[in-house]
Image (cartoon, rainbow, N blue to C red):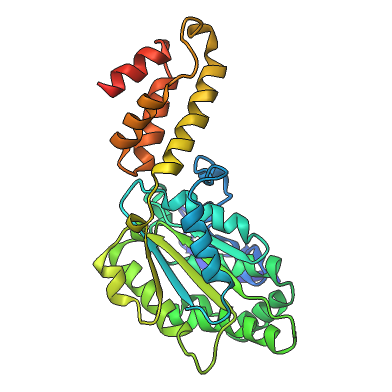
Length: 320
């Protein structure tokens, strides 16, 4: 409904006051959530994130299977924290899992660019906005909650999680025998401002760990190993260190697939290069130099495939 607000301002060069009526347009909302509190740029499939790919077919199967096992285990921990060094493939794994469970997954990717995705302010509203697509009956319950308390989004994180997400989900579960367990996949947790990251992890961990009253939700968190995160995680929770999962075979498959693409795209520059390119010995050296870091592998492929120089010469330069 349009709201009218009367304010008085001194008219220019007039001693008297003029009364102006300002008409405020209603704020656009999605299931009761103001649109400006939904950070669509944080969705995994947002245009801003289209440069982040999923795992290549047949790669990282060990860690993907381990996470899938946790998701499908009805007695599993509510929170799973997947951590590893920068460049170890966390984001691609996160997107592969979200794709694998697309009918029940809500996503959020923290990032320092743009800065608005470094904050936890819109985290729960953004997650909540995705729920009615996954569980249609939740939308009306969210709307009812916001109608009864329009200030929910201004309250602390634990209250937002409880009233906007957990209660509507629990209510739909009590009326639905086929209970849907929502999977919230969060990438780049360490990209969130440290203090806000701690508050967010604490809110999640303290709100969903009540085994006496299990919630129809799981949180899958991805980020570098940061003591600040570990400190706020309340046991029990699942912890997967990517260092414990060898990536060498996956990186080898990645190199082979990418170099086939390079040869196909730039074959006119490689007519004198014998097959296979690169040979197995060169691939072994590349995998060894990569040391399990996909960011190294993807950077090397870009170096070899870009520019006007011969790909075979650029690869040799990289090896040396």
